Structure formats: C-alpha cells, structure tokens
Image 1: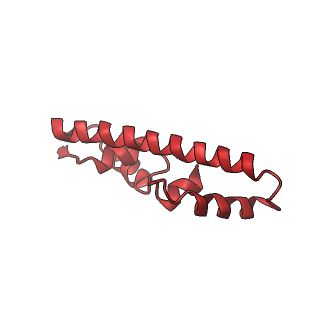
Image 2: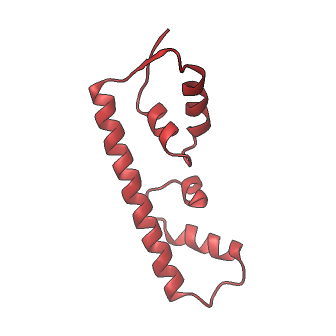
Length: 102
C-alpha cells in the first residue's frame, strides 16, 4: 500500500520528545514494507521545522545555563529548579512538554 505523509510524521519520528513520536514510530514501524512518500514541499518544511526546533533547544539550554550560573545556590531541590526554569524560559517557543523532557 502507498502512504503520503505530511510534516508531522517525519518530525514526530525524528524528535523523540515530540508528542507524536510514539504514534509516528508505530506508523512507520507498521508500514516498513509499504511505500511512504512525501512531497518536495513537505521535505522542505520538515528541514525548516527541524532547524527551528534545534535552534529553540539551543536557546532553551543557553537560558538554563545562564539561570543556573546566576542562581546556583537558590534551589532546594530538583522540582524547585525545574519549575523555576520552565517559568523563566517563556520566551523560548518550545512547548512545555519538550522543555520538561530536555
């Protein structure tokens, strides 16, 4: 059988922290013998989206590093630190779930 995929399937498959990762992986794993197609536009969108995500992860990690340097003695436990990081990095466009995973 032939399948055409939009950008969500390859992004979900590629990014382990994406909310669609498991569904994308299951889809691809269950159709290994089938033909899976994508258009030139979808391929271009995939690369742009992937690059944007990588940039956002880099920004997020830089925020985390600077926050840790400035506040290294302020955290009693991991959960307090995590909440502080998640609230202080609102400028970063990664969704909440991805930030928690990273």
